[in-house]
Length: 74
Image 1 (tube, rainbow, N blue to C red):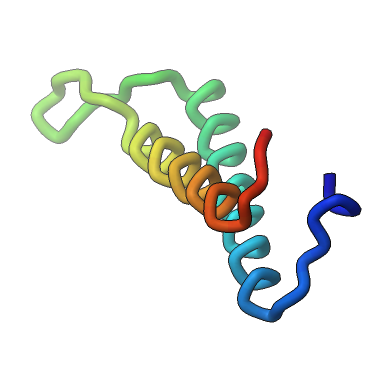
Image 2 (image 1 turned 120 degrees about the vertical axis):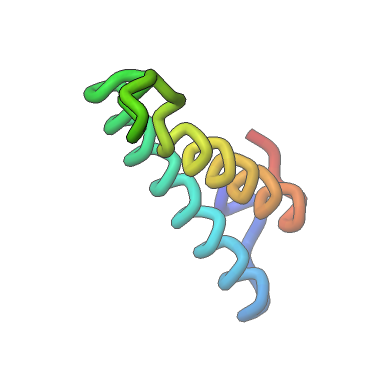
């Protein structure tokens, strides 16, 4: 894939790097969620959504946006 879409500018390289960092962030968040579960206990003792679910969602969106900007497909 990379050979077909050579990154030709510094801006494109920065976008690619940011996208890959976002992908890594999503993976780390998913690993933690898998280990700790989808919910955690809030201050009031009630179950609530694990905060890393939002991190994972946002990181995945950032990764997909970077691919779109670079005109890459999965």
